[in-house]
Length: 204
Image (cartoon, rainbow, N blue to C red):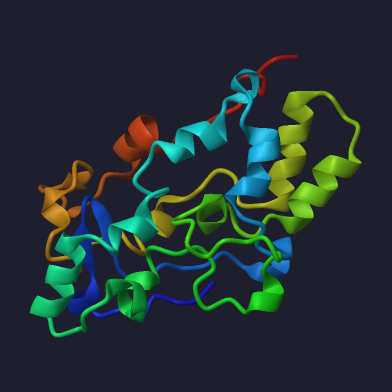
């Protein structure tokens, strides 16, 4: 995606969700952005980990909506950034998947208002989706190994820290901000909020 360009003054927290610049995963590596709804078809079943279902319960899923809140509007006005956070790039970058990506590089059904979706962390999923649909392999562990070659798995801490960082004047309100180290506690966040494995990955 795009590089992080927002300044500290434009890096905020609204309802626990950061407003800052977020990196996009490399489009060339995975093809087009498809959207969480496309991921849902394979990642909703409980037997396979219900990753989509878990995502819908997170603040990432509501990241776009958070920008429409009174709190978000108050913050941008106080900082002289404008009146509508959903129209301010410095805010949108961390609340929208595929920010800065051309429409032709997104699936026609892709919803830019879907918040921080799967592909914000895992990169564009077109090639992954096509590869999995064309593969008749039923060994979940083997499928997982193939998927790791098709997209970033697992997600690295540095990616999260592009938004969750000390530049936010409200970062200390976050449950996952380590006040002693003054950094985002990726390990804690991963265990409590981020991790969503397929339980069949370890089965033979």
